[in-house]
Amino acid sequence: MQSNRTLMVLPGDGVGPEVIKETLRVVDWFAKNKSISFNIKEGLVGGASFDKYGTPLSDETLSDAVDADAILFGAVGSPKYDGVEFEKRPENGLLRLRKEMDLFANLRPAMVFPALVDASSLKPNIISGLDILILRELTGGIYFAEPRGIEEIDTQIKKGYDTNLYTTPEIERIGRVAFDMARARNGKVTSVEKANVMMSGVLWREVITSLHKKEGSDILINHMYADNCAMQLVRDPKQFDVIVTDNLFGDILSDCAAMLTGSLGMLPSASLGSVDQNTGKRHAMYEPVHGSAPDIAGKELANPLAELLSLSMLFRYSFEMKEEADLIDEAVSRALDAGPRTQDIMASGRVKVGTKGMMDSVINKLEELTK
Ligand code: IPM
Ligand code: MG
Image (tube, rainbow, N blue to C red):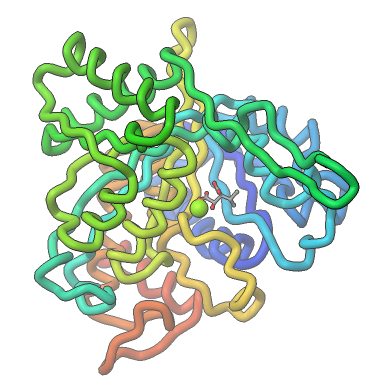
């Protein structure tokens, strides 16, 4: 079944290859036990690609990624490349993939698994049952807009500058995704910018407001400044349903939201392009929020669940495999209820395991659930 689909796997750097390796065991599990298989194509990205090809993303790998039905991404980055020229840093491989495939909608859910309520640094009553979605604009704003640069003002002084720029269509398309997501959730969108300080923020608020009038009257909308949003996220995160925001604020607020849940090691994300009118397909890349975690890389300590939950999102959003995605989510939840844990979510009375041990536990639950 479905063996005509291509899954591109880009493990990258740091803990990326470790968590990808374990997650592919679940892909194998579906092939063996459910006869669902894909064409799997692997490629290099980030520092791993730089070491081999002198670039963080080769044209060949990019073209394979563009052709694939979905991409499962690990992580990029390592202090090893700090001295490398800016354009060739590992992060640029990721940024290029986002830009070239126009993956403008970045979904970063932050949900608290019941078994992990105590793993958060916040009080249980603040975060238990939390389920919010940060929708980050991913291909515009200060990450890409020109002009940007470092220039000399005179021989003593330089200036470094970036541009935060958004156009009406860019704001409208992410706003539309926010309304769609809210419709499938709890019907509420909080649009976040700094319209009190930034012109791009003034336009953002204007466009979202008029889009809401035209296309979102069934959605409850409110507007919030980004600094207030950061504060509200730790004060009372359950007030939110969908937060839609620009590329930079989304980067920052999603790290904050992630930590509410106890561990970065638990959170998946999806980056989606627009639906092609002719083929009905959309480019999509799935990656854990945690990044390459150089401090624990190579030690088999990383929690593989964010990567696995990214695979679950991939099944759900790109492969229309809702049942299988639900199965993964349920297996993860049960593995957390009882059984061993990786160090990042360790609790007293549990056995501590590494990356492989954590996945063994989930695969056991998959077996149990399908017996
Ligand atoms: C993220 C990361 C990236 C970003 C880095 C690795 C370029 O922090 O996905 O949140 O800033 O977007
Ligand atoms: Mg980030």
